[in-house]
Length: 167
Image (cartoon, rainbow, N blue to C red; front, side):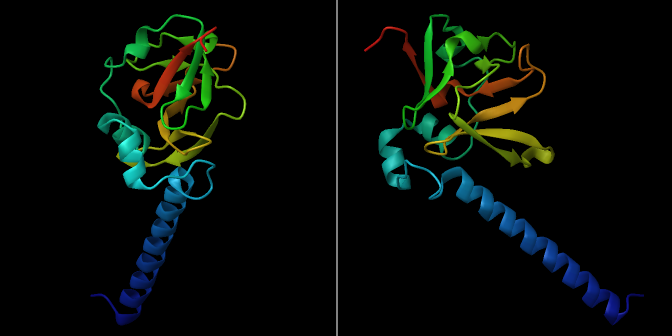
């Protein structure tokens, strides 16, 4: 039988854990799309600027279907940019075929991305965001090629490509 003291103590612990969970969620929301970024838009402005699929991935942290992005086959020299704010993210020389169905890179450009902890789907992953607008780009893993050993597994719909020499 449960005593009143055990019940109240358990309730207090559960309440504290719930409060910490809410604080962590709120902190992630701010990091992903709050005032800490240079490019700030309302939800309506983002919806006007982006396609529905881009909005789902960049603003709602969704994932595109594997193998669906034309950027998987992009082999030209150039730069991959954020589809939300046009910040240059990855040079084409760091792109490689990972076999995952998403464009993969072993290194971003300097000061192009930010990361945060993603605890969805009962696992912990490192989420990658555009540092200028906070848009969700994908995740980074520690199973990539040399020289970094990283695999930046990006949603192609979250990016655009600008070939070298393009105006």
